[in-house]
Image 1 (cartoon, rainbow, N blue to C red):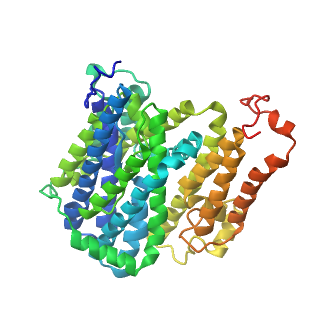
Image 2 (tube, one colour):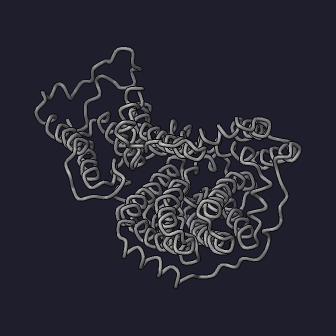
Image 3 (cartoon, one colour):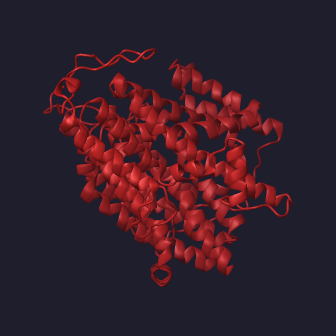
Length: 533
């Protein structure tokens, strides 16, 4: 294809199919955050639907505008069609802001307005931290093995994006199975439906029809109105001032925003593995700026490049799908259709789309990394299982309290921890792994991949970096802290020292030939020398 004659088309037929997957992802996030803010933190509808939701829509519009231009630039530069990066509210970070920032303020003050003000102040400051990722993102991308970056995304996809929606399908099987059927046929099997109707649209539509027949969908138009986006500078400044008066909240913000810009880096790497090349630093800057714009207009919740680019690439989408999502989300936010859609579309009808996104990402990773690096991918997944367990254990304890069980110890209670250990549930280990799981998964995936490739100094460098992060609480801790040398930190230092020093002392012959491991696939040629040798 000649660069002189090539013209990138923003809209393609397959954008319509991809639209439903990304729209569902954004819609589910908006439905969740609005429900929690309204019914858990007792925020009035004028804050939830008049400020937060329109602010989130403005953030999405701003980011989509940049990523559309970026896709056009990348396509014309490469002389081929590309898929624009999917974009929206970061699901994991959204929950951290809800229950790590907004929730504690509300529970301690019972002031929903103040909780919202602190939320948008935290969003603005967090956006600054996320944008700073542009300074280090390109360097991290250069030195980090693809298996580490994609493997930690596979962990998120497996336990949060895939398994949770799959369980919701099985909770409402008539709705969920009907929707899942069309996802299997049209998106995973890639067979055409009559008239080439997009499978995502048919899946959600069929599930919704079944829900209406079963009486599990409602038509509530009471929330429809006009909610224009307005900047809330004074409220945001009040929130920032509260943050500086209570700096312990920054101990929540900084680690989670480090996570956010690393998530962006990983997702850009995922797009590159699928064949589309984007500048990671500019993407991190865009995500940070989008978050700050959203905060200015009333949304506390950070935005990011989404995890599912390979799925949209498989659908041969261009940029039209993200433009469509921005337009529909904006209309739903500004005219109050969100509450109407919340009652109409059951979660079980939308869940199969998210399962497809998770499966597609994991499948694409298997094609994008060297076969011998799948060990690194598997290692990178493991911390996210611990994160999943911690979330569910916390939900279990809260549920027991909600049904009136009295005298329950809190998670972390010494007696409960001992009892869990006796029952085979290693609470302390899972807790440590769950804190900063995406960074931990990336680090261990990188260490394993570099050891396999014989890049011992790089592997040792990641171990030393993990020791530093562990010592100050970026990983394996709830909050940032003064440097301390606990056993996890010392463990990382031992690994780093070994990987740096031992290859210099070992007989050269031992680095020139591999050994055969019984009962393991022989993926590594035993005559392949270590690179550092």
